[in-house]
Amino acid sequence: MVGDKFLVAKGKAGMGNRFLALLDSILYTQLTNRKIIVDWSDETYSNNRSNVFPKYFNLHHLTQASEIPSTQSVNPSFWKNNLEKSVNEVLGLYESEYDLRYNNPRIWAKYTTNMSRIDYSEDILIRWSFVTETYKLRQHFLGDFAYLQSLSNETILKKIIRENLSLQPDIQAAIKKTVDNSFEDNVMGVHVRYTDRKSSINTYLNFIDKICEKHPKILIFLATDNKEVEDFFRAKYTNILVTDKWYPISGSSLHQNPECPDRFENGVQALVDIYLLSKCNYLIYDKTSTFGVVAKLISDIPETNTIETSQYTLRGKVKNLISWLREKEIL
Image (spheres, rainbow, N blue to C red):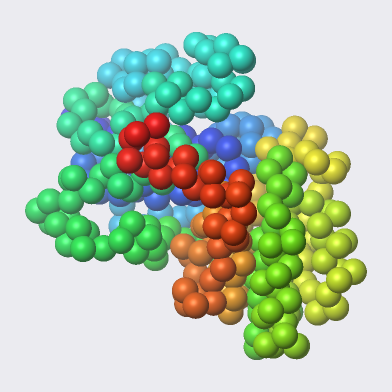
């Protein structure tokens, strides 16, 4: 490994967040010829702090390493002597709970590689994020990568998923079984996040009812993190499908909950829901939750059959504006 350079993609937050951050990390390693190490050994989806990533996914056509080398040549420098720690543990070493509570992106930026740069000399770069930052890499689409300049960010991310990432066969089999046994000719996928973040149910219902008027026998596949939402949909609609999953007590998070009895299985359930959403004929989601964003990236659902609900709510418009300001590096 003498002379090798690495990028360690750490896991942070829920499945949608870490999935999106991984895609950018893959692209970064391709641009910089670094070996990628995906480290999801935090406690979100692991009961014993083992690295669960290879139990969920396979990587393809990438130069990989299985272990994080021991070195002091690390960026950001906060990670020196902390390479085996999780993102939350490293943040906790240097930041107060008060500062972290408000999700300040300027604080986060100190602890992850700046995607705008590809000239780091350090042997190991640490990368984590809640979202994609493909736009920061565009200035480096040169030479063999110049063809990426003409592609949208979404097209680039779809390409990475298609070429470099696949589910483990057992998870693929579980998804296929549900599709084969339960999906019908016409399926509407609906993702409703309703615990730590709440989507507007009425906005969803307006679009669902319009599609049901057009297709009275359509199957509704509901992916939600809230049992009360599931019960509501079952009472309102007759042709509905929901996968079996563990639910937390009302109002608490599903995918980062310390009360979850099997955190690895919790991650499997998340992936099954995401990929089932991607196999529907219609998709209704709120992009302020990355869960639906990932489902759309994986899918081949036509834009005409995709409805993003946040643009119709004031809360969503504010969040979308903030995201745009951050992307333009104004905020």
